[in-house]
Image (cartoon, rainbow, N blue to C red; front, side, top):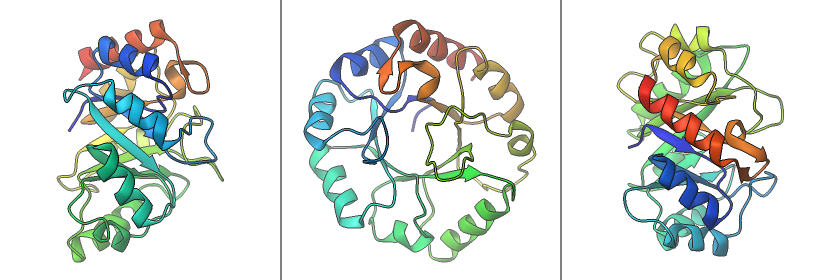
Length: 216
């Protein structure tokens, strides 16, 4: 659905910056404990300021299904990003709305991811995309920590035919090396293009998007 995504967009100015830099998608963070959290009214302003060429992704962490569905439908989002501890059967409860399931890859490697996706296939609720992020205890993404690229590069057929989105500490300086090693379908960053949490830096955004597009 996209190749380059800038997550944690918190205002219209940054949304237009991301669009003008050539990114394919923006992430709107609905996790209240995140420094990039936004209210639905702000999200509506951001969505309304963009056209259909930009994929609008809503990021949720352990939110009730009813809340996610209501936000997706009312805001006109294109993709739901589940970044918490939601079990496979939770995806079924979201109906036919497309889901990108995020995983924090820790000491156990990709085995938990493979097990999770196997359960998804058994219940016919496979996600549209899988995002692999760095692991940090008690943090659900956006930490700036770099994922274990070697482990992800050796993933074999863990994901099957599900596109991989690489996240975790990506910047304009390292995204080329990350793409060359891991070979993802897409990349995602938040802190790597910021001057402060929730505030995007124009130069860093443009540098990241240009480098990622060239490498992809």
